[in-house]
Length: 245
Image (cartoon, rainbow, N blue to C red; front, side, top):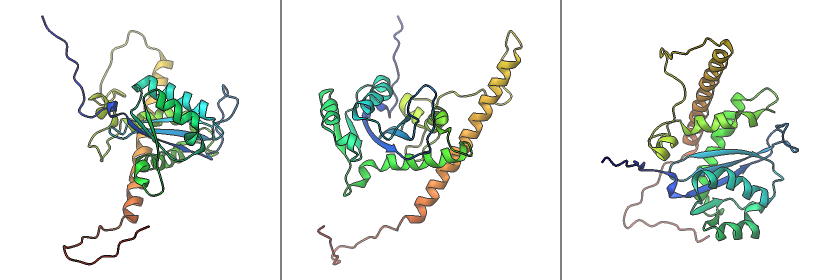
């Protein structure tokens, strides 16, 4: 009798160390189903796999509302993280936030000015996302929230140099299937022009998304390289000045 064995990827969200940050003061983006327009994005990044979620929200979001966003978009999809690292925003410093996540078995940490690397990966993701959205939104930049699901998919299905694969590959063991390859033919029973039109439009959008995401990643890398300093090497016996601050 054969036994089914599920293969686990070497790198996955089971690392459960995630970072969070809010991109705020964006142009208001109105969703007819919401009372308040969106003006912020909650960015959630898994430290190990780089899997990311881009969640539209509002700068006036309460701690309770933010906790619900995390539960619906992170916990329900991946389980309870072991650790959440955030900045020192008011929502993250609140007793409600600290107590709630401690109660469910998650350690909430806040990054500090002395250890900016604790949340550096989210900052890098934020800069890539902001550059990407500027490339793809309307002239008024008031429709950015509509592009977040596609942006998230493109980001998670793109090659990341730091891990040598895409976040989808790191998290599931394979890249996500997007659109059929060029020249690939799929037989359909009926000729439905509207279906073909929608499919073609989705493919055009996907290509544009990937193009602009690649541009955004390249822009960030060039900008980071421009400000990167060469590491100084010291030899045994050399005298150095050490700051005690």
